[in-house]
Image (cartoon, rainbow, N blue to C red):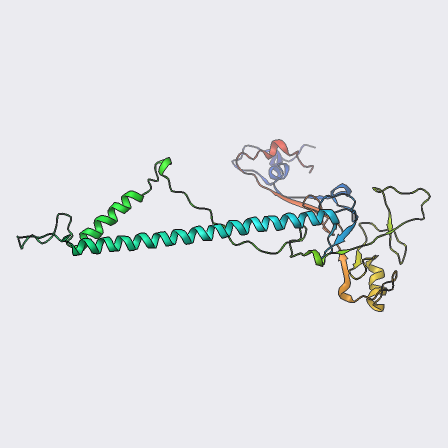
Amino acid sequence: MPQRHSKNNNDLAYFTYDEKRKLGYGTQKERLGKDSIKPFDACSLCLKPFIDPLCCQKGHVFCKECIFECLLSQKKDIQRKQAAHTSQLKQEKDEETERLTLQKARELDAFDQQNHGALPQYNDKSFNSDRNGFHGANSVKTTSYEEEALRTMKAFWLPSATPEARAKVSAPTTSTTCPEGNEKLKMKSLFSIHFTEDTTGEKKASALDKTYICPSCKVTLTNTLSLVGLSSCGHVFCKKCADKFMAVDKVCLVCNKGCKERNLIKLEKGGTGFAGHGDNLEAKEFKHLGSGSGLGLVRPAMKT
C-alpha cells in the first residue's frame, strides 16, 4: 500500500512535521552507555583509577597528586590576577593624578592670561564681541578647550586613530574552587578515603583491575550502588549499611572510631564534562533548522 501523499509532498514553501523529524529537528534524546559513565573508582581529573584518593565535602573523589596540582595552579592564577588588578588600580590612580594636574595647570594659565592683558580692548562700544561670538575669559577658555579637543580627538573612521577600549580587570576571588562542583575548596577540607579490596579471588588483581567490596555486607561496589564515605576515618560503605549502622550506632564498623551524621559524605557516582553524572543517564540536545545548518546532510533520517 503506498504511503500517504502528505508525507511525500515536497513542493511546499515550508517544512512539514514529518520532514522536520527526518532532519533531526527538535530535542534529540539518547541513553548513555557504559563507556560514557566514569567509574566510581576513577579520578575526576585524570579519569584514571585513583592513587591515594582524596574526597571533598561534596563527595567528589580525586587523586592526591591531581587535586594538589589543580589547587596549586588555581593559587598561581589568583596571584597573577591580583597582580594585574593591583597594576590596573595603580595606573588608574596615576592617570587621575595627571588629569587633575593638567586641569589645574590649564586653570592657572587661563587665570594668568585673563589678568595680564588677555582681554581685548575695543574703542567701538557697539562692537562688544569678537568674531567667534565670545568675549573676555570665555574666548580664552573656549579656544583652549577646542584646541585640546582637536588634539585628543579620535577619528573613528581611520583604523590608525580608532579609540581602543581598555580591558578592565575585575577583582579576583581569593578562594580556590572544586574543579568538579565549583564550590569553595581548601586543602584542609579534603580527607583521604579507604576502599576495601576483594581478596577472595584466586588470582591477584592488577592495579588497573581492582574489585572493591563493602566491609559490612561484602557486596561488590559498582556504579549502580550509592556509596558513603566517613570523613572521620575514611572508610567507604554502601549507603544501605551506612544508614542502617553508622547513622544509628555513631561508630565505624571497621576501626570503631566515633562518627557523627555530618561525617557521612555521599560519594558522587561518576560523571565529568564529557560523560553522564549521577542517575541522569539520558543525553539531550536541541537541533534547529537554520539557514545553512545542513542537518539533512549530516544526520540520518529517523525511522517512522
